[in-house]
Image (tube, rainbow, N blue to C red; front, side, top):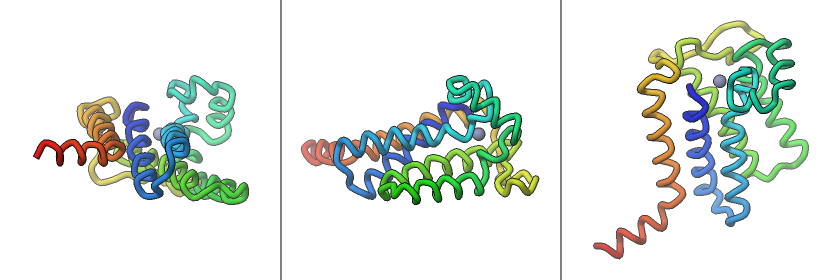
Length: 167
Ligand SMILES: [Zn+2]
């Protein structure tokens, strides 16, 4: 999936996290930002990805040590992140937005023909029975649909009020 699709999905899980925890404005902005960044982090192993281009050295090192779409797309990686966040006593809403952002990335990549090494270091690729080409029509439509979903969740109370006024 493209970075755009991953970021839109990050936006959506961030929006759902706000909805669930009813966070204040400052926290909400942070939750959304963390969710979007986390939804892009697993692709740090791709030199050409949005995040890989920004952190060239880390991207290079991860690629050399682990290879593409392996460690950073695995349950092991997510488990280590959860453990570290837990150690520094990250509040639940930040922890959820980060973990959901990472998970959303892995799940979306499982919808692509290459799949992901979910159980790294066990070298098996995991993917869904139905897959879509990166950058294809489904990928692009998904990015739009996820963004619209996210905007709806964020502005849902206002939209609701507006509709009530009209009716
Ligand atoms: Zn990926």
